[in-house]
Image 1 (tube, rainbow, N blue to C red):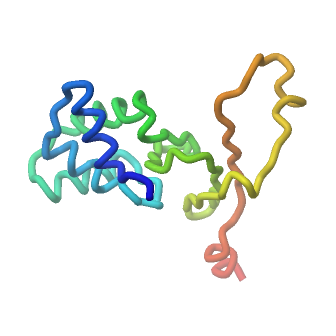
Image 2: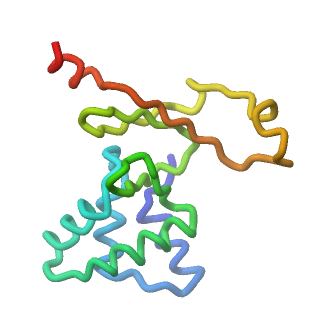
Length: 143
């Protein structure tokens, strides 16, 4: 069974000498298993509701740390806000143009021959496909 985000960060913190603060723990618990790809505003609201007064910059700094350490992915699929994904396994996303909902798509559902597309690259490290469309809920409302 895969380790939780909290467990992975605890191991990282032990190796690097980082402290586990209540704010960090709250952020990790909110992101762990969260399939909604939350914005920094949503993460901040959760931490503030749980701990009271919290600086927004604390949330931003810790998210940057998680991204640098490969524990969280930043998704640039929302023109108004960055979103965050604690699932760092290979997968793709589908985004609803009406409601903004983001859905994970397993990596094996979409295949691509990057060698043909990326002749100018010696190697590729990551591939992410973003599909844009209208989700079933929004399509029903339009009928």
